[in-house]
Length: 158
Image: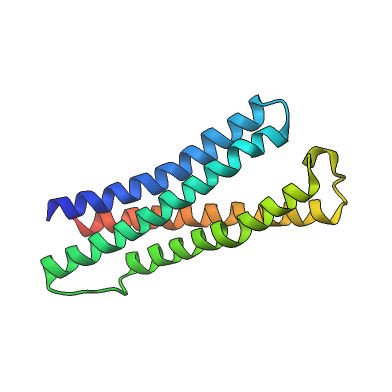
């Protein structure tokens, strides 16, 4: 049983820790250090894709180990517990960001070439900026929902 709890916690640590590192360390650093936003975007974009995959795998591991833990310890499946619903929402947001928002942003970047050379009023740039706002909101939502799941999971083991 303790191995299931360890898997649940590890999944949350990887997912939430990855978001913290990406948002507060990686992205600000590359945009501050690299001479062109284009170069920074070339680092951030694949890193975000990897972060999304880490989140999707972590979410699946959390759900599987949590459901199994409930089944063994309480003889209940309980798929609609608050933590499970929140993790499912986190997974949905991550998948929308990864499979919908990010590909659209990449297509716009490719179409624009060097984004710094495209005027702010260009419809492609306006759309890119709008999608970037949604991407950031999605990641922020996943982060805050994840913090709630951490609290719910910690309370579960009291």
